[in-house]
Image (cartoon, rainbow over all chains, first blue to last red; front, side, top):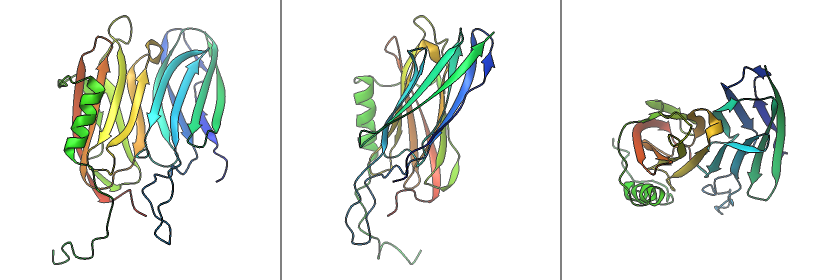
Length: 108
Length: 136
């Protein structure tokens, strides 16, 4: 499978205490384990099973995913920012791969 | 309507509403959820069951004791009702999240919120699905 590529949208700046909206998308087939190949054999499940978002090391939002989440899992959620810092986003694959990306935000 | 069920492929057993109820009870620790506080937003009709936008919002100050811990999303007509579980913290700012899900057929989507104080709230919406999202 092609390497999963995360894409994240975080505002570059915010005012202290502001609740911002974050959007994330990662390319991934999310093979559900329900499908069958041409010979009728079940295609084994391979999905991203966990997504987390941290800000300066503190948990902000996370999600446990089941196979019913669509391919290329998309999440939109909020975060309250009181100081400048770094958002860290992590996706965990069934095969043990971990995909990560980071975004800085300046709080005025 | 003459097509009936002949020629229906052997699909994996679809989940029943009872399976979904059991998952709700596992999530709430046996407590029957109340209505209110939680708002589930789904389209009334989904043309493509492979990617159905679902968003959920829970009324909460998201600080002190008025905090949403987690929200369970279920689809009671999928082969497995489990869809996703969102976990929030005080740093979430508000208990709201959006994702995209697969629906095999017309069915109910269920969202259950668990608050920090242990109270639980539920919302349910039926989504009519034109093309199922669990083919193969």
